[in-house]
Each structure stands twice: as structure tokens, then as C-alpha cells.
Image: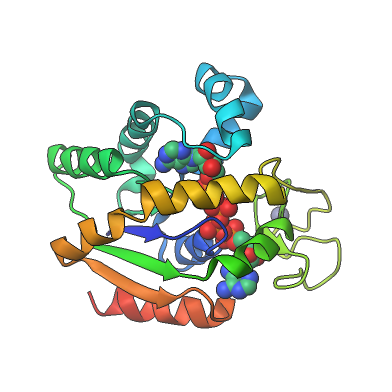
Length: 216
Ligand code: AP5
Ligand code: MG
Ligand code: ZN
């Protein structure tokens, strides 16, 4: 199964993708995480992406399409993939259709996580992740059971993203509305767009996504 989680920055794509990966064994492909890893490793793509990401703008379509195409060829994608943060422009959506056809794969569903912009700044500025395993948390909305200790791996080091500042969030939201939101009618016309309420509590959003998946 190939599914896309589509939503604004902070809508909860990563949080829900991790849960789907744990439950169904379909791999989460987060283009944001891949770019952050490339920046950290100092690769050519990382060097190109760093400044763009810190401005809250989008990295070029060619780079992103190449990354996803290579990633889909890896053996861990055999059971399927959850696309988290890709596609983000109409050019990426068209390139995805083409590459899936070439790979004999098909896109099963696009799940829109609907949110109001007002809640997103608080979600993003309160976010942190386990430095060891990448599990995501929030200062208010999703604390580990024991403060300072990761639920998943017991790690005690956490990190925050350098693009999670309130000023950068504004540019990221603008990029979403201008460049990514037009994908909603694109997928609606194909008849594969479903919606969940991204404003609901995290567990409720998971229930709604599970409902969508079991209906396809
Ligand atoms: P990316 O990493 O994809 O960032 P984003 O789209 O801005 O989305 P986020 O990761 O911020 O949010 P999320 O929806 O995953 O929310 P989360 O689950 O963490 O991209 C970063 C950058 O990389 C881009 O700006 C761009 O430069 C570049 N890039 C990436 N892909 C690209 C592409 N395809 N093309 C071009 N450039 C690309 O949740 C947020 C917080 O809220 C968490 O703390 C969580 O615990 C909490 N939370 C989650 N759900 C709820 C809920 N229902 N209620 C309360 N709190 C919640
Ligand atoms: Mg994310
Ligand atoms: Zn951890």
C-alpha cells in the first residue's frame, strides 16, 4: 500500500506516520527527515538544502523526486510506504505518478490532515524528538511517560529542529498554502482524497486514519 499524508507543517504527519509504521510495518518516508540527515552528514544534497530549509522554503523538485524514487526501490518498501512530506508541489505529484507507473506501483490513498493555522505554531515550537531513535514528542501535547526519558528506547538526549522557530514557521505555512494545497484538488479529481480532522487529539486522529485505511 502506498499512501500520502498531506497536511500543513505541524499537522501531525510525522506523528501519525510513525504510528502507522509501527502497527502495519509499512515504512515511513519523510523527506524532511531525509534532508535533515543529509544536512547532518554534510552531503552535496545536504549542503544545497540547508539554507533553503532554514528559510522555510522548498527544496528543488528534481532533488526531491530523485530522493523518493531511489528510496522506493529499497527492499524495506516492499510492503508499501507512507509518504510524509512528499509530494509538495504539482510538479512533484506529477513526477510521483510517473515513477509509480514505471515501478508498477499504485497510489492507494491520499489522506488530508485538516488543521487551522492558529494551532500550528504552538505545535511546532513545542516539538522535540529523541536524539537516539527519532521518536517525536511535545512539551504539552505528547510527553514521555517518564520526564526526560524516551518511551521507545530509554534515551535521555533530545533535540529540536532549527526550522522550528516561530518566524520560520510563517514562511513554511506560506509555502504550504501556495505550493502544496493545490494538490488537494489534484487528488480529489482522481477520487483518492480522504480527510481526517487534524485538530482532534492525537489518538482520535489515529482512529480516523485507521478507519480510512480499513475502508480502502
Ligand atoms: P518537513 O520535515 O516535512 O516539515 P513540515 O512539512 O513543515 O512538517 P512538520 O514535520 O513540521 O510537521 P508534521 O506534520 O510532521 O507534524 P508532527 O507530527 O511532527 O519538512 C521540512 C523542510 O524540508 C521543508 O520546510 C522544506 O524546506 C524541506 N522539504 C521537505 N520535503 C520537501 C519536499 N517534498 N519538497 C521540497 N522541500 C521539502 O507534529 C508536530 C507537533 O505537534 C509534535 O510535537 C506532535 O507531538 C504534536 N502533535 C501532532 N499531532 C497533534 C494533535 N493532533 N494534537 C496536538 N498535538 C499534536
Ligand atoms: Mg514531520
Ligand atoms: Zn528514543
